[in-house]
Image (tube, rainbow, N blue to C red):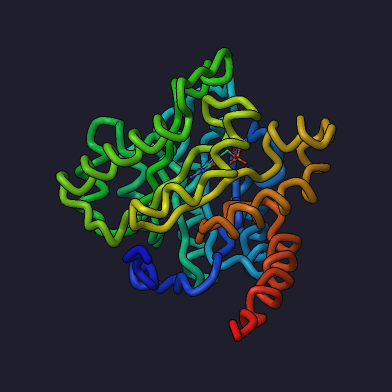
Length: 287
Ligand SMILES: Nc1nc2ncc(COP(=O)(O)OP(=O)(O)O)nc2c(=O)[nH]1
């Protein structure tokens, strides 16, 4: 149907896209919205990453700067101090691809040099130097939609047509990336759930996320423990939003997402196994 590549070469570590793949979140931050401070030392972050791989994570996403609404920016040297040692250790101690969650080109370059094989950029390479860094590094890159900036994006998000506007943004960022020299086979899109969007916007995007498959690149979905899940379920604490998060990611997978960015790897892996079993049942022969 669409010419989505069957695998991603993440700096030599292949990620087959024969089924939805689970990206385990390792936030090396003191203030991430759902697990801030839990893994903000190298040892704790490495141990958490190894635990997520043991639970079935197909790749890990290492982040050194919280992007929650109202979060404070992290200086370059601090972000490097947080993430590089963790990437080095995890790249050594696991065989799964390691992703760097950053929008700073200097962090992208240092992270890939340290062993990361995928760039996860919530700003879709809009920072000065980011397009060139992605083109030079030659690894897959996630282009995510965000309306506004983390500090104020949730104040009054508004769209005339959220699907059309996110689609137009991602199409344009893909064009800019390819013009800068990023191979289309390295592009991944992400609708940016919770980044300048109300719960209604998020649900419309989730319901119609299959509309984005026509862009011909893998799609990543990241709804894990987010505020929208809390609003729909009444779960105040992000840690209590596991069932809602798993449901949302299962729906995203059914609508074509090939990468699921989650905190709760074991629960998500279990849900995908049940879905795969049902999906494997042959369609009835039309007599
Ligand atoms: N591609 C992508 N990257 C992301 N990075 C961070 C967060 C925010 O979640 P989390 O990392 O758990 O929180 P924080 O940013 O507070 O560390 N969400 C996404 C997302 O939806 N897509």
